[in-house]
Structure formats: C-alpha cells, structure tokens
Image (cartoon, rainbow, N blue to C red):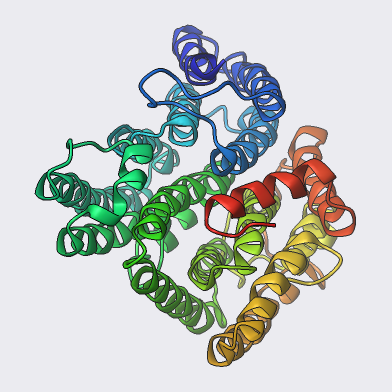
Amino acid sequence: MLIALVLAPLLGAIIAWIIPDNRLRPLVLPVTATVHLMLTASLLGNAPPPSPGGWFWLDPLGKVVLLCISLLFAVCAFYAVGYLAFRQERSNRVLCMGLLVCLSAMGTVTITQHLGLLWVALETTTVSMAPLIYFNHNARSIEATWKYLMICSVGIALALLGLLFLAYSTYVAQRDATLLLGPLMESARDLNPGWLHAAAIFLLVGYGSKMGLAPLHSWKPDAYGEAPGLVGALLAGGLVNCAFLSIMRVYQICLASGGELYFFQNALVAMGLISMAFAAVFMARQADFKRMLAYSSVEHVGILAIGLGLGKGALFGALFHLLNNGLTKGVLFLSSGNIHRSYNSKTTDVVKGVLTRLPWSGGLFMAGFIAITGSPPFSPFISEFTIVSSAFIEGRHLVGGLFLLFLAIIFIGMALTVLPMVMGEPPAEIEPTNYRDRLLTVGPPLFMLGVILLLGVWPPEFLVALLKDGAAMLGVRS
C-alpha cells in the first residue's frame, strides 16, 4: 500500500499527459485524489511495519503530514475541475501532470525513513511545481518561477551539504555511514559533535528556505502571488508541511544526541519570531491580496517553528497547527482564485464589494481570514493557544509576549486589506466577466471550512491520539 501511495499519482500523471481533450483531462485529478485519500485512510488505520532495511515506514509524524496533504489535494482536485473549465484559453496538460507528480513526491516524503531519499523527493516537489507557477504565461509569472527555482535550489543544495556532514559524522565516529533515520538516532550520542552541529545548521537553513522561514522567504510573495489559487494552496499547505517534516527529522536526531537539541530549539524559536516579525511588517496595507496570503504563510511557518522549538506541550500544538494551517490556507487560496478570476485583478484598488459580486467566495474569504488569524471557534485558535500558553508555562515570557504582539499586528494588517475588499459595492468601472460562483469552485473550500470549524469545536479522538503519538516521537510522552 505504501508503494501504491506513490505509484497511483504517477499513473494518473501519465494518463493526464496522454488524454488529448482539455476538458476531460482535469477529471483525472479528482479520480486519482479519491484513490489516494482512500489509501491514506486505510494506512492511518492500519499502517504496515517498517520495510526490510528500514527505508520505508509511515510513522505518526508522517501520518499527520500525509493526512493534511491527501485531504488538501483531494479538495483542490475537485476545485480544479470547475476552475479549469473557465481557463480553456490555454492547455492544462502540464498543470494536471505536475500536480500529480508533486502528490507522488509529497507522499514519498511522508513514508521514507532515509534522509537521502527524502531530500530527492523534496527536490522533486520543487521541480514539479515550478511550471505550475508559470501557468498564466506572463512576465511576472516567469520572474516568480525563476525566483522560486533559484532560492529553493540554493536551499536544497545547502541541505545536501548538511546530509553529507551528517553522514561524515558517522564515519568520524567509526560507525557505518548511513542516512537511515533509525540507525542515526541509535548512534546519535556517539556522533562527532562538531560535524553534527554543522549538519544541523545546514539542514535547518536548507529546509527552512524551502519552508519559507524568514529571512529565506523572498520567493514566497512572488510565487504565491502569480500562481493559480489551487497551486498556491498546495504550496502553502503541502510543500510547507513536507519541508517542516524534514526539519522534524533533524529534530529527532538532535533529540537523540542530547547535546544538540538546545541549540536547535533556540534557532527554531529565533527564526520563527523573525518570520512573524517580517509578516507583521509587510502585511500592513498590502495592496495585492495574494501576496498578503504569502506573508500570512510566512507568519504561520514561523508559528510552526516556534512550536517545535519550544518543545514539550507546544509540540502537540505545532502538529495540530500543521494540519490547521494547511486546510485554512486551502480555503483562502481557492476563494482568492475565484475573486481573481471574477475581477481580473489582484489589487485592492480594483477588488471591492466581493460579497456583492461573489457572495459565496467573498464569505469564504472573510471566514478564512477570521480562521487564519486564530479566532475562535476555528481550529487554528486551539493550536495557536496551545503554543503560546506553553511558552508562558515554560517561563519563556519574552517569546510568548512577542508571539501575542505579532499576532495582534498581523490581525490588524490583514483586516485593513480584507475588510475593504469584501465590503461595499464593486466599482462601477469594472469590466463585467462571466466568472461566477459555481458548485465546483465554492463547494471544495466550503467543505474545508467546515472541517476546520469541526476541528475547532470537536476534534475527533483518533486525530488527538495521532497528534499525541507524533508529539511522543519528538520527546513528549502523554
């Protein structure tokens, strides 16, 4: 079943490439996504033991990320059918194939226990998503694509150096050189501290650039701003989570070593606070609402880093926030894609009165804003409250205070952009378009909004148990 999780999307990509009809081709996406979601549900309930050699195993951390990726992709796949029906002016062959290849690569990230294969899979996500950012074929999208490729490639190259340092630390310790997570954790206390320290730094910077932690985030505003909404949703809720899982693997090794964990945790907290500070500054009066969502993503990867860096009780909140952020970003990016198509603009000078022009999409965008800023009763409130309360419980009052300060500034900054967009009347000079709310373009984000509302009111017991198991792998026993 683990093999099927990787091969099913690849088969779907081949079928999508072969189908000549631009209208029929997007149907491959929801079919493949449904199969992938069924496989995911089966694996969550009954995961197989580690494979011979230990290369593949779907552990609790991988399960959390896989659940978010599979659910988010399924929603985006159904949305894509409705969205691409309005984009018949250009071929969607590369888009459909790239999405499915990326799904296969993201699945590989979640199931592999070999850090080298994880690196290859993460680089595959970078390459497969690059042509999708260029879907609109204009000067700004090609610039965004090259910036995304250059910065992420530099980051992933630094991560490769980190892996080489990690492998060399085993050689210096006169151990069998390996990049398998299990043996590395077993021998972590015997690894050369200097090389392990260097490996942790390079891996954090490398995977941090892929994740979009400030100051390594400069590709995000352009890529998220120019990509179609469904691509932005998968960038923010899929690729970010895969990069964060890679950082958690490094965290596990540092935890097992004993000596490197304190440094690694402090570095994560520092980069997390810097990310939130950058978001607070650049989100204020942001004229491009899709770039605003990019800075929101910078904020929330910072929250994830802080939760992981604080450790202990914050680990449960970080894992829960991984899921909450991914699904909420899906609501925001898909509804923003509808708004962009209807107005043919991403600037707040033009986009006004969305609730009048697109009642469903405007309502979803407004609800998504309320959710992503950590307001009850939506689930991001629970995960953010868990992290910040843990900071105060552990005596990290400065971290908790800055966390709350940045959240307040970001809330005000987003409100100054979102509220004028959705309220009032559309400008009279806007050219009319035939893009309207339809079942396939509002149903998927509406479903995701219902999920995050349910998770905020009544999180299922199986999910709570899964998150606790994941936190236990990071050093917290319930």
